[in-house]
Length: 198
Image (cartoon, rainbow, N blue to C red; front, side, top):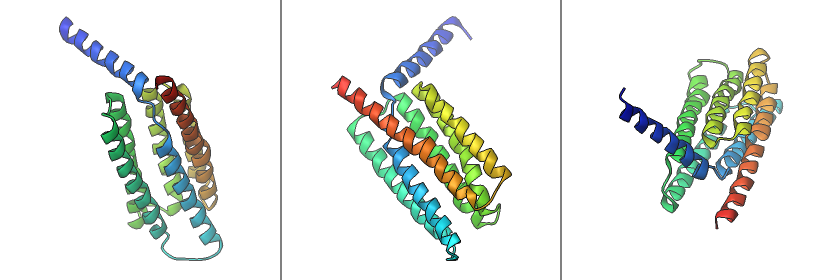
């Protein structure tokens, strides 16, 4: 590698970092929306099982995930039309799209074909969510967002060791404390920064 190439790469990396710090911060609404619909899905499934109302619960999740993806696609298009995406925003978008597709496949296809029991969906998805928050925190340059991953991973370990009905409650709690509440914090931060810039 010659000196010019090395300098070009350093400048490229510096641009990404500066670009990310300035404009990558998310408004948090996606975290809040997805968190709420997943919590509703989890608690609905839990209540139906406790009430001994048996049917293929996959239908609940097809509706929940369908609503989530519809929202994400519409929201993404609107944001893209409003302002061009920075490189940092493209990175965040790519992280969550790839993780979202992975979670959809693991949450719907895996159990449908009998690859694993339904109780193992939550811990598997918790591992992925932990990874997504860790990467997002790095791109946002927000340490507290990175640290959310620890909560997701600890929750995953607990649910792997002790699978069962309580997984719905644990996963719902993880969603509230490590996705919805952080989403609200990001939303408030986004609003404050928008006021400063205007």
